[in-house]
Image (cartoon, rainbow, N blue to C red; front, side, top):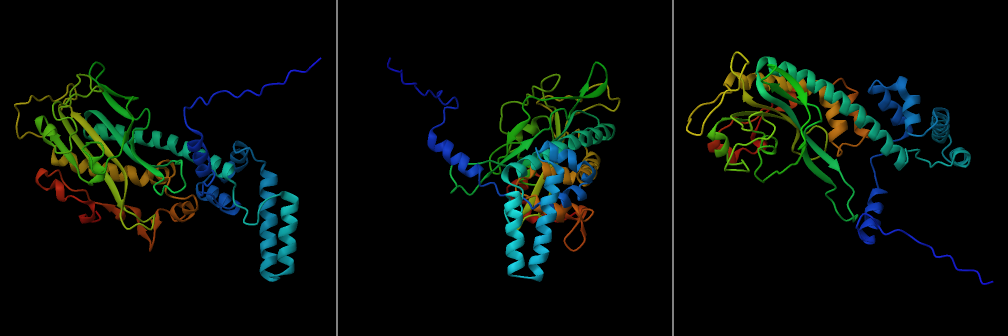
Length: 380
């Protein structure tokens, strides 16, 4: 009897992407360069206060602590021997290590290990951010009571492109962490934290957007009523509707950014972190929202004193959450840099305190918006 030839069947690509794209995407992904040595891995755990969790962290990475640490010690010993006997001892020691453990000479975390470790740190940082932001927003509500108070965080996220020739491998966004929008409930007369469906916005450096504007121009927004619509960076000029407000309309707005000089990268510019947003100021009794109509002119519910309070609040928050912001949202900062950044008690380069690197934002001055480039600002 003639045997039937088995037909090899492969399901159709469910992603709808062509093969060239997939090959390029995977090639770029495999070139992931944010890796560290095993020695640096343990150093980072120490400076982040996670050393006593190292066995569990390695287990979460699919690694056994004993074999992981043993290899690190073997290679360190081989390298020390290499320094003393530059030729024969070095070659034999490294060869022995490679034969026994199958790892390379520089002993860096492989791509899978580096991805896994970075994601573990990012997850911890996100939870720390959520807790800290909620705590500070409650404090902000006590000082400047508003219907909505939230923190929009600047994100520089690494994405693998389909071709290795693409130089810009980061997408810029403004992100609202889930569960960190403080919302005042008029029925219970108390604030509560809610989730907002539209919690990621593309960062537009030059396009109109009152989400991007405070950070792109390092400029405060402080407006009420029709002056919100008049802002040159307001995207929708025909309304002040806001679906996350209880009555569906924005009556007053204050947004205060936090930008620093960039002590992290080699690029000579400023680094954006976040802005704090106060929306719809409450009356002094905290029982209702201060409302406007389109006929009201020259009114600003958020005062200059409110602005001063917001400036101080966002500085206090920044000094607490700086490491977590970098780990969770700044993919352009390599993990090797963590040792330098977080191992000096927030003093970076020539012992300059982190708070001295905060750049003062421009005031909300409609006449000078075009010239408000943040290279004209100065430290606070």
